[in-house]
Image (cartoon, rainbow, N blue to C red; front, side, top):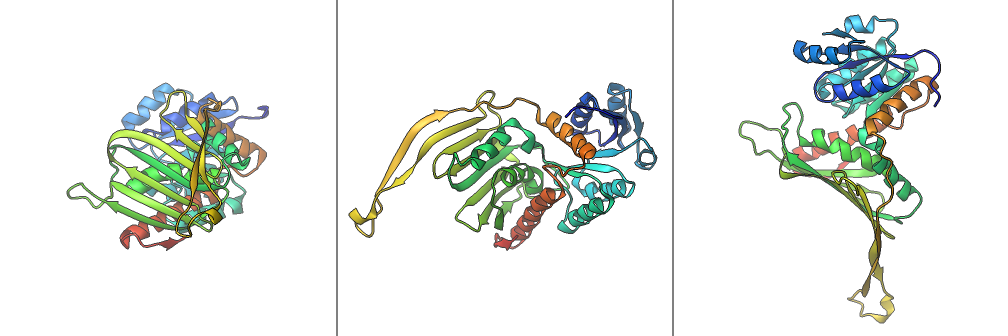
Length: 343
């Protein structure tokens, strides 16, 4: 896109871990005007204000939303605040980018989507990983049929800490890989089952969990999330009828590996009825070229483009809603000892 016209006035709410990353990327966009930084912690607010002196600072939203030159707000705050803050921004006529997950409940997501549609505003969810070159390449490989029919999507996202107090490990870590699955697979899940456990005395917040998702066909998806792992792992394996793929987000130079491997079933007419003759196909292993553009740079650019061009974001409200529906169903399954919950 060619950047023309007035700059888009922006505010970033939340100066903790993620907010400064948003500030840096928005300030680097030539048509973005970082006007406001908002946080209730004066020390964090001061630190960010020193780094971005062109922006004013505030401890609450009232003065910020009254700024007529402010057009968009990015929320990098705890999930419990997403709905009330996003609603205030939308009611004030501001476009909104919300950190994942979109909200705490399905009904909150639905209300925000309806409000944004009613006011003709852009509502986007910060599913950062779908803007990485690796995930976009995976989507392309699946869409072009290079992997064949998808059999399974298997994800591991584990590390030691950091423990959250307001959400369990499912709400903290699973949105990343659920949003990747939602983006790259053409089919959508129909049921979810979840098992989890808490190992911290005096807490009821699950620190380890396993989610299994069923689809209308024979595809299965499985997610392992864990705050108590001895090593940090960020890996997804996708198995198809033609090829298989491993995505390792922590690999420095080989994020994606594609294996020309698979199972070949032989003619059963020559076998006993109780046996299946199988052969294994082993071909080449290769690593495709991955676009190295920073995901958050591409995402913030996309948010501004959507505002200017009035088109739906790739990670729009309905995409955020789909992820929260899975999270809410997984939470219900946890409470009922892993029962299958319809999505």
